[in-house]
Amino acid sequence: MLDSGIVESNIVDVVAGNVQSVVSQSMQKPVIFAFWSQGSEPSLQLMSLLQRLPREQANAVVVARVNVDEQQPIAVQFGVQGLPALKLVHQGQLAGELNGPQTEASLQQWFASTVATLPSEEEQLAGFLEQVQLAIEQGQGEQAEQALRQAIVQEPDKHLFRAALVEYLLGEGRLDEGQSLLAEVLEDVAELRPFRNRFALLEEVKDQPAASLLELAAKIAAMPTPEDLHAYGLRAAAAGQFEVALQALIQLLKDFRDYRDGAAQAALLKVFDCLPKGDPLASAYRRKMFNYLH
Image (cartoon, rainbow, N blue to C red):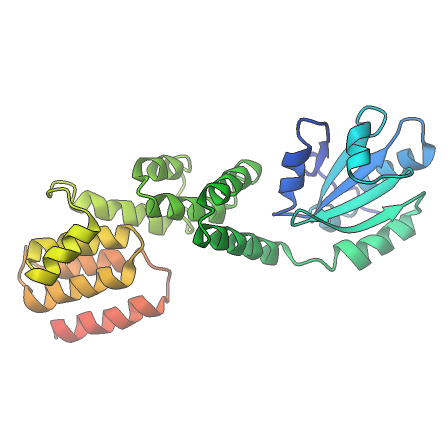
């Protein structure tokens, strides 16, 4: 017997005003568009079967119900020619379909052969974030930002979406927006902790004269001062430019070890906290720091 495990958060009724939003949900989780009519007994039976999917299956998809009596244009858009009809959408593309009356066994077989063979939720998440990064690299930052904001609205507890958006905002110099986005999450979560640490770096140099990273880099190239090396290291790390940041701070440690009572070592440790645990860049520069200290 089927376990009645589907949850209401995984069921949505589709109308003209939300169809594109529902399709976009397929970037994070497969969506089954279920077309039905009050006057079609087989489609009513299929809707009942869908609501009784086993819990592990129900949590793997979003069921998007479309009442064709009220939403005929959507049925035409999806090429529905008869009822009942299921259309599986994944990553914004049609990935499978099932047409006509179904038994519990045939629905389960279709689910196992089609839906269950799609990438796992973790793989889908990784693929979505890869697409976002590719869009940013190709100059489509606005589209990437919109996709991330929509993903956050749909799944606010998936903090990797928020982390990716904060990373993008930092790269664009939109610091206030990035801080506001972080402030929406009150609890300390691992995915966001490095970004909180990066904003804390900016607090360290907030009283120093404003200068862009390019200006600071030019000053360091001409005549490095401990103040410029310190400011550049912290600001570059906050912007995600970790290698050049660590290079500057290692130079500060090497050439001006006593600057502000060990400010170089303190800054290096704070930058390490901005990198993921076990990051090879952090490991390499920890060794360099140790060598200069000892």
